[in-house]
Amino acid sequence: MDKQSLTSHSKKLIVFDGNAIMHRAFHAIPPLTTKNGEPINAIYGLVSMLINVIDTLKPTNVIVCFDEKAKTFRQKLLPTYQSQRPETANELSSQFGKARDFLKASKIPVYSVPGFEADDVIGTLSSKATEKSDFDEVIIVTGDRDMLQLVDDIKHIMLYMPIGGLSNGKIFGEKETIERLGVTPDKIIDYKALVGDASDNYFGVSGVGPKTAINLLNEFKKFSEIYNNIDKIPSKLKEKLEKGKESAKLSYKLATIVKDVPLKLNFEDSSKWDLATDDVLELFSKFGFRTLSDRIKKLGEKIKLEKQGSLF
Image (cartoon, rainbow, N blue to C red; front, side, top):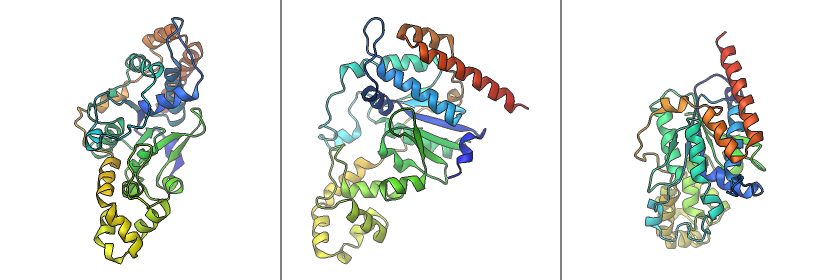
């Protein structure tokens, strides 16, 4: 991947996974409260991450996506999907409304669709941005490894993932994805169909682990081709695959990020963001974000100077 492209003046869309970053921030940052005692640490982390990402990656366009409370199609396919996860703590769930207030004040569009996860909304936005718009790059900011299936060097879709906290991040293209998971982005769904995902509570084929899955995909290329060539597979492994076929097919559906969520898209709106508006600074005063107010003002001045410099 050409790292030089990350600092160019190309048309660049950043798509922020709001839920993933706020969950990460909530658990990484010690409890913070407003003067009224309302929890505020997840919003603090979200804003900090936005500032870092905008300063580092220099986007022209910014969008944030969230989950909705409604049941998703995955929960309808598998009622136990993610059922082992604890309920979102009230101290975190109470912050999402304030996060949306901040994003509205900073003119950053928010997308979410009932019945779909933020992953699906992001997958759709990324796909449409590269197919039907003129973005040179799309960079998805998330802590969720499932999103690595969206990485595409040809379409210039990358991930920016926090590493060791919220202040540092790493760009993932196809090379970095292979280093992390052992398979190319386009094989991640096939891989998860075989090994499952314990964090989402689906289990692929019982007895098939990462090494076996990677070997199968190296030989047969696709999940479907493994079953089309089942008679070529040694008997013990063949038996496991046949026994787990229905579970594998369901796991494939659950692992697949949807790219055609019904959305009314207006990418032009995503170019109007401004973190340093009076409305943002007023909100930050209520939140008690003095340091972030200073950082946002400095970033605003820096962006103005960079824009002026690019005109000459």
